[in-house]
Length: 273
Ligand code: SAM
Image (cartoon, rainbow, N blue to C red; front, side, top):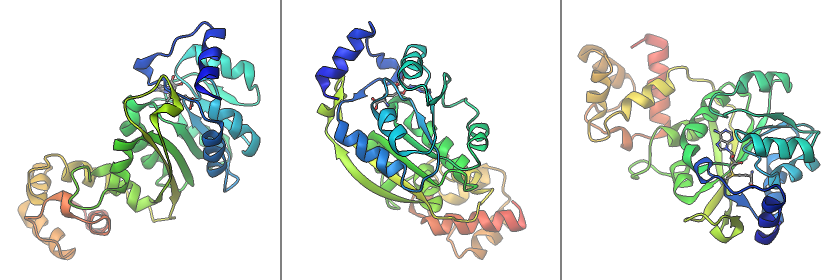
């Protein structure tokens, strides 16, 4: 699909892109094919988030054994249902949809593929990472704005290093597949995009990791100890907890590595808060 053909398709259905829903449609068949192939590598069923008019969906149905798609916009959902009837279409908000139920119905494991709506990239990714912690999402192929992708690849000490970075880094191997310039979309967004592939490492599920990350990064300027104290951990317990992990209390969360966070979460899980 070229930019002209995306425009033409929209006109055919009497639609204008809804910017509030992050509707920047992919206008590159080559990119759509490459993303679909990456999303289908392990032969699992695929759940697409926000299929829009189906640029990526049409490629996914060629290589995935089953495709389900969650689209919030009723008009787009109708187009997909009409064009690609083999796709299991769910006309809902992906932040609220019963994704665990859908994965169970697809056999217990499913990959995620998406050209993500930029306005909810972070909460959606946090949701997938959280759901994928039990191994039910073996891979995610995600197109997102460049700035959002930097959070996945950040290193300790970087400005954007945070809960998303650590959660992704603990459960998934993160690889940058390609960069896409803004002129490959219609309407054209203000920034370029990146496609990331996340492949599950099979790491043991840490039940306290998300809690820990949310508390540790609650106030970025505060030390780890101060943030954990504010979360209700006593001074005595803080000393034993951080001591057991060989971590100084006056360090800030943004300086801790993924492995150090995992150690603290494991220690909390074993011996409590
Ligand atoms: N996949 C299409 C493509 O690549 O051309 C469209 C991608 S567009 C960036 C994002 C899509 O996500 C739109 O179709 C939009 O309606 C949909 N969307 C936005 N918010 C959503 C939500 N909360 N849940 C599900 N879909 C959503």
